[in-house]
Image (cartoon, rainbow, N blue to C red; front, side, top):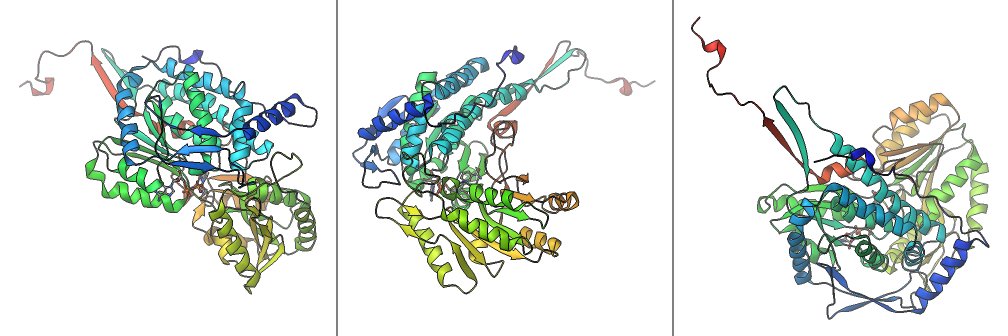
Length: 543
Ligand code: NAD
């Protein structure tokens, strides 16, 4: 059943291209950006391998240039979601019977297509419609997603290799079946790689999938569906629909064959869906597997021995790359008062120099936030901070929506360690700092650990090994990804398996065997070569 597991090509991390001036990759992506920007495309749903349109077209605009139209997608209603579930269930038997090495081949091919002929297209789509710089698009859409495909194949073989012991005259085996039913993948806007991984990880393990992407990630999702078709994913195995969240959720969560939920997004949405699943539990044929990676309020904890320049760089990259719209983005920092004067000066100076604008201008470090709702929410928090006596804005604080959803990188200093922006996830380029007394390190650790409901990522900067060790121990439940002298963003598949606990998710670690194991329902098979022919045992003899 699982022969030749060792023969699979070894997984590796896709090398990141630099896009430096005069590099061939720079010329090539610029040409692709110009071409894609000059067209208006139509994006249908994909149900059972067929492209399906509805009577409702929605325009797609670049966040940094909301007057421009990149194309249109066709909105789904409840009926389309039902059709997608039916298409998935129709494909389930053949896909489950497909030998593992053929499933592996499809996703290894997808990785090579993505990092080769599809590289420019997926990066350009992510830059234009999600407003990422070329570097942010490259590390996400091309490299991380290729890494997910390649490493997941390796993890699948490692799982299959786990087999039970057998006794004399018996043979015990574990058969790693897919779940019985379909998996619903519900994905966020902020990473093309996550949008790509959530449907494909269960599919690789033999499951069929209904995928609903975020409204603001449809443009790059469309490229992925072309990729899957070319890589050989059979019709019906991954079906992409575009309903509103509640419409899609209602059809899926009431279906008796709903067998798994693979989610990344906000904590509030995850909690409400978990409640619905609980309410509907008696409707399902099987207990649905629930995997959800959700929000964060990620910290940088600085010890009095830290290097100021290293901290400033980590804060700027950690808080402001991709406009702070990473679940792992540094959004609160605890700075000791002995370092504060120097750190403050350097931070203000460097934040003021950050270039922001269109991702097609490669000198920009930041682009626009994803949509008007996000822009309005961030502007509101900034306006409050301007007035609140517990807060002072020391950098940024400006915003402008005349051309795109632009929010300047903003640094708030909180007088109260429980000020709202120290606790709530804003999901934008806003960093809040609390300055503590340098000699009250342990109190600061306690404060950090008890301030937020989240526990996704966090970093400690220190050059005192005792302090580093103390923070590592003390904050053991405060982050699922803990960094020492490094920014809290930028986890790499195969190197830092990703996910958090507390309100940040089920911590099933995307990019590791721990995630893939949730998408299999093992069957134990015991075969007896010499079955007994006598029911009585020796202890039952009279003498
Ligand atoms: P979101 O929760 O708004 O949306 C996620 C998905 O759920 C989208 O497809 C959306 O259309 C759908 N949805 C929204 N409301 C719904 C509802 N009421 N019912 C059913 N579905 C609904 O999240 P987002 O804005 O796309 O992404 C940002 C969030 O994702 C942040 O909270 C961020 O921290 C989190 N995130 C977490 C991780 C992680 O690994 N922990 C990674 C990326 C993003």
